[in-house]
Length: 113
Image: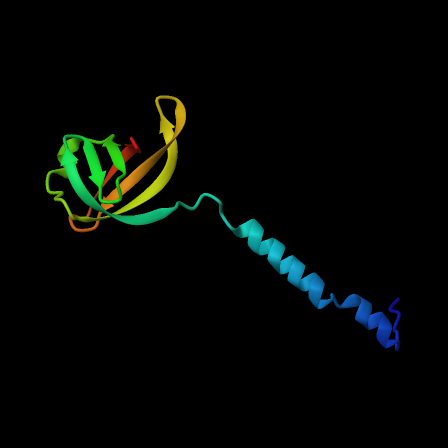
């Protein structure tokens, strides 16, 4: 049995308010946002000493990968550094991916200072 209502206030109760729609949209947006996104920043290579990379910002990184991967890296190369989380020797650690934009290569490293 279908009940019809000619009362406008009954219909308005069935339509969500703008505030409710806004709160729902905001909640869905925040739930869909992934907190696993990495933070990246630009820097420049100041020097290389075996498996140690020095940046122009003063940061120093110890490379975890084979140092031969940096054979063609030269000082003043533009790099992008992104923090990552991963497992190493059974422990969860934060490491950095250093991407050389000039040589189009990437190495993983730990921050020394």
